[in-house]
Image (cartoon, rainbow, N blue to C red; front, side, top):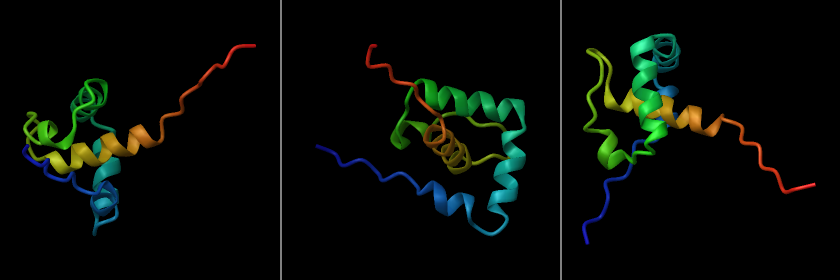
Length: 82
């Protein structure tokens, strides 16, 4: 069985030099958000996400980092009944 390539650490991408400023500027772009939403909705792992088409000038790693950041900051409400 083939071993999966480890995903990049999103913290490294976000906290790199000028990384946080770039990431937060990308979040405001509509096309970028479509890519991130697709990644989260289809629940792609890095082995498939790194081959998805991204807008010009945006890396797969940046899309991955924002997708992970969003998934960790999305609240889920779980109901256990009355």
